[in-house]
Image 1 (cartoon, one colour):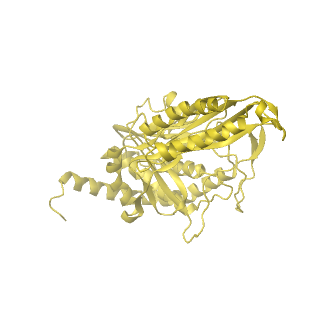
Image 2 (cartoon, rainbow, N blue to C red; image 1 turned 90 degrees about the vertical axis):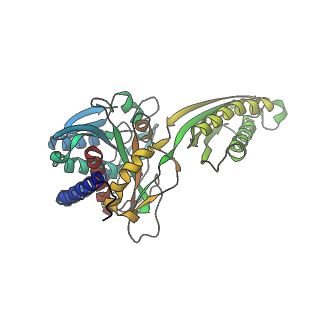
Image 3 (cartoon, rainbow, N blue to C red; image 1 turned 45 degrees about the vertical axis):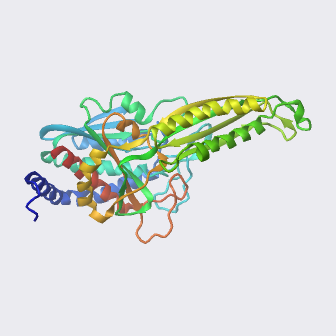
Length: 424
């Protein structure tokens, strides 16, 4: 061994290797439980801010482990606090617990057949983003750590968060409300870790990016006012549909001509247009809604500014009027570089050096970003694609599928990261 390696590093390495070996029996003992929990959650999904049975099962499990439990946080959230045998720092671990309004198409013995009402319509409900795996993984971490309080120097806070996919209209929810209600306080959290399963990453692989890793997401609503007329006489009115088309075209030039995409990616997407009632009537108004995704605060500010300038100006040029409202949905998911450097040795030890890989930033969004805005955080991606699979399906789709064999790597990684962070 290189004699130049500092003594403290040697002591740390020997401690963590011994730690891993000492927990192996605990990991083996809960693997089947984690899979059973995951399948139960998958078969019984609940929509955002309506995760009542999910929360009840989580709370019961934590209480049975002797963990201090708080329920009803941000409507249906559950928070557990586990104090180690020695005083020290506080680390938080977060899992999201809500499902999506998606009808499952997979032929699984535990497939979801649940239906619910969403925005006034009857919809299927499915864990089409893997939150069922996140929940069961964190329940497994809680069980392992609760049996090893003698190895914990400090406190672990387990955050089971509702409404990551966004609360229903007119309601607050998700990470933003949890932070508002003090989830990172009493005791004050020093760092937070979270993971997200990925259907297109092979089981056994962990991927991460230091700095900005997921985009800030914003929604926008554009109201266009024209002048109604007969479809055969467009010159007697002002066509809000034509204006909407010109606005859409103009917005895309912000991305293609004003933003340096060699720096970071950015997206403006119009997801819905509503206007008119009949084929031969030019309507009076039109509404457009969409999303903005950015990975850089300067780019976000520039895009917002230009959209607010461009939308009314284009409408005016064609004889109409338009207003735009932009709302924040999530912030940039930003992995604290110093924390990433600090925890990489743990991740590589658990998963294997070659199985911990860097990745590029993505324009998907995560409200885990609201925790990272308050304390240093590290959010990484866990492989969920079955070995030998040649085709995988994206998140938020009816065919989304996760292989259970990837769950225990998540349990081990979060457990070891927590212990190493607290005991380092």
